[in-house]
Length: 216
Image 1 (spheres, rainbow, N blue to C red):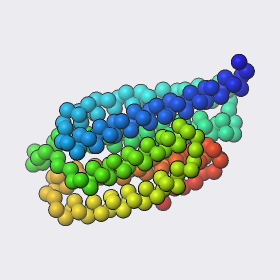
Image 2: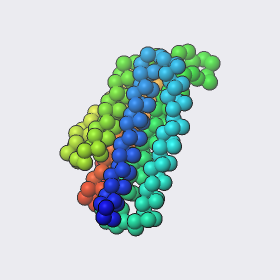
Image 3: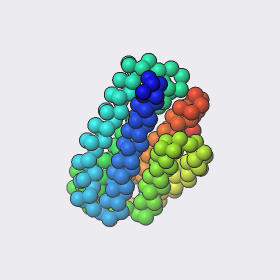
Image 4: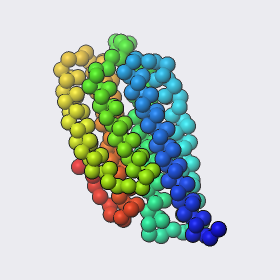
């Protein structure tokens, strides 16, 4: 096999590692949202326990990226692909943290005045919309396309609007202990979509070399 062909295979394997980690993060987020929706404490605890494996996945991506830089001395688009993979693994690790944080609040609270967490439908919908944005990004990364990014930006505006409406509604009708946790979860979901948009920026950077700012 020619050196170039071997290097291309290694780059593609790195991309697949990121996609695989992304799918695992999306699954964790889906479970956290389901635990929130159903008040499922055991499922929430499973999400928290599973976070360590996602940290390991991020570390593996970083190590492989460093190895490629050290051994191949890539330039131009090849280097962009490697740098973007490392950056996206970081964004995914942060999204996994939001899933874990949400699950922890479903599992229980150190505040003795807070009862079981009952999530309004709007909060669950916000979480599902944010996860759908993440899945769109992962599909774009897997398929090598950027056409979906305009759609992602449109959904990001929708999430921002839903988040602001939900924040006002929660403050207006809930008791303080419950309000704090539900507002924090809403913020987690809003940040999931922001992180997905950061990943979209990396996809654009990889394909064109342009550094754009999609989060305004």
